Amino acid sequence: MKINLKSLLFELKYWFYRPKWWFIDFRGFIKGKWFQLFNGFDYHDCWGLDHSLAKWILPRLKYLRKNLHGHPTGITFKEWKNNLDKMIFSFEYVLNEDKYTDKCYPKNYDFGFTSDKDGHVIWNDKRKANYHKLIPYEKRYDEGMKLFALYFRSLWD
Image 1 (tube, one colour):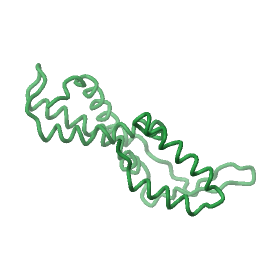
Image 2 (image 1 turned 30 degrees about the horizontal axis):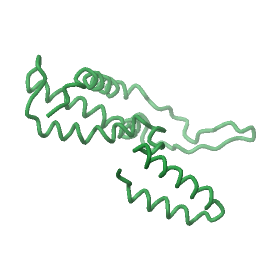
Image 3 (image 1 turned 180 degrees about the horizontal axis):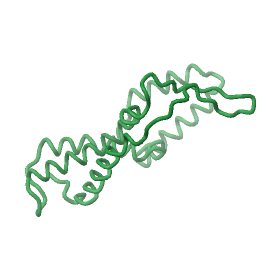
């Protein structure tokens, strides 16, 4: 079982800044670590399981790509490398999605907003995002994930 020391220190630092919530935070902290001890994973990982799995899979795919010794039957070695590159892009896309969605907004876009007296949101910037710019990336993502599913049993070294 591996516990991330950096996140543990952040949790402890955060805990000391909110004294009136110490008991609730401490109880939640102990509950989470207890769950992790007996189940082998932190239940917070399930809040964004796609992101958690991508963080686990991506470095292993990159290692496999760098240290190839074979390929599945029916395709060439070059095709297998190309397929692994497509799979790697898909998992990088999951982890760095903001990098691609930021391209949809005009330069100097103001993400801030206010609300009126009725509670309706009023965006500071009236310009619209162009999500059509994501279509090529989404197609590459879909292709890589289909290849990952197709060659799942072939991910060996």
